[in-house]
Every structure is written in C-alpha cells, then in structure tokens.
Image (tube, rainbow, N blue to C red):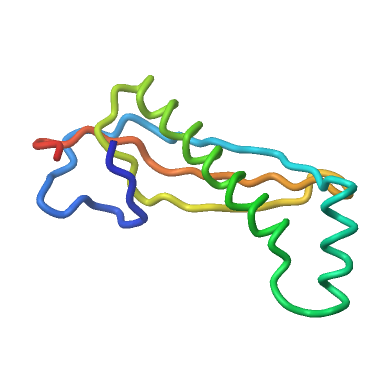
Length: 107
C-alpha cells in the first residue's frame, strides 16, 4: 500500500477514486507518566512520555486508515493528513485521513 501526502503517485496514474478513508486513535494520559511529564515540564526539555504516546497514536491511526483502504481494494492513499483534537480533559484523538485510489501500475 502506497501512502503519500501528495495528491498523486509519481510514475503512476490514478484510474479510480475509491473514497475517503480514515483511522483514529484516542489516547488518555497515564497518571504515572503524567507525573514524570510534569516534572520534565518544570525542568525543560522534551517530554519523552508524550512524544512516545503521540507516535504510537499516529501509527495506530495510519494502520486503521490502511485497513479501510484495503477493504476498498485500493492500491494507494493520497493526500494523507493528520489532525488532533481534544475529546475530553486528558484525552485526545489522533486522526489520519486521505483518499483511497486505484493506480494503473501499482508499485
């Protein structure tokens, strides 16, 4: 499965648009990690616990988007974007979405 932020796939022609596909993951803060993150916030620097949590949320959202694209028998997902939103205090959603397409010559 080709995943790209561009509206086209170099070397291939889009022959059919299969539809919008998306994947999301909602994550909450962990009490223990939140305490460590607050201490790091005071001292300054990267908050590794949140960096890791967001990276995992992004990967899960991408995986879920790819699953939707596979159901639609797509060769690629183009114009991929990410969006985040707060669902409730302490919980955020990571959303990944794009357009599932069929290509003339999938790589």
